[in-house]
Image (spheres, rainbow, N blue to C red):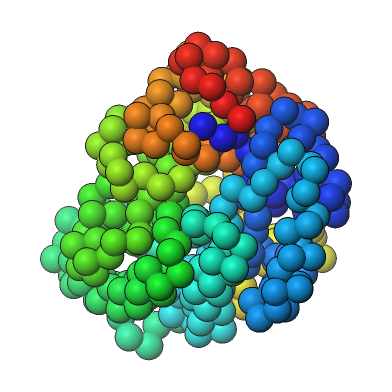
Length: 335
């Protein structure tokens, strides 16, 4: 089993500097962002790599002697967004990342299923959370038709490039739990599309990531280690608390494509992303690692650091220490 870091938290420094941080943590892999919501900061020569062996070899040379290898590519975004400015770009980012993975000798691309609008001609995605009304099932049927077309085509591209696409089970996407993952496969017949098991988004939905790994089995291609702390305010507002604040143009905010931006997190939140070990202890993570190991002893488990209460390196250090302790408890050898 290989432990690593998703590089978004290290976009503030060069790729060689990021690799040193990861090596100093005693970890051996880096998952590299290659598009979608975030820029491909650490792969500025992507277009060249796709067509030039020299450019590819120059990029791979950066990793030589570092003790850190590429542990998958990541292009989380919304490839099904009804606004073509966003959807077409994110959709092509996924397919380009698949081709890039092949060029780099990689076999995993992490992304999201995406979320269409509720009907043709709409401007915004529409997430149906609880389809108690028959009209919502009509919306879902339209959305599945959109998703099936894109993912059938993308699965073929993945097959041609010997790459597996791992979808993060992420709310605000059509695929966000085991049932919706299986529906996508049933509708597309996909063989190279499966799951990236990010525990955090399961925690806040009050799901058990260990049980989900066991349920999904061989459909789990890749994993992310990110924790969640459920706060007392969840007893009042619930997990679907929607108390976000729109950030103005003169505030620091992250563009998500087109004219869409990340909002400010609720001040009194029902739950928060925290460093691995801050929401669930090493004993829990040991069970998580054991479940993943049973699926694939060579599984990549990639730390994603989004704990705003901790510094970039501080949070990574805490998460790495927790995972190493968990691996020792589980009796699993990691790299």
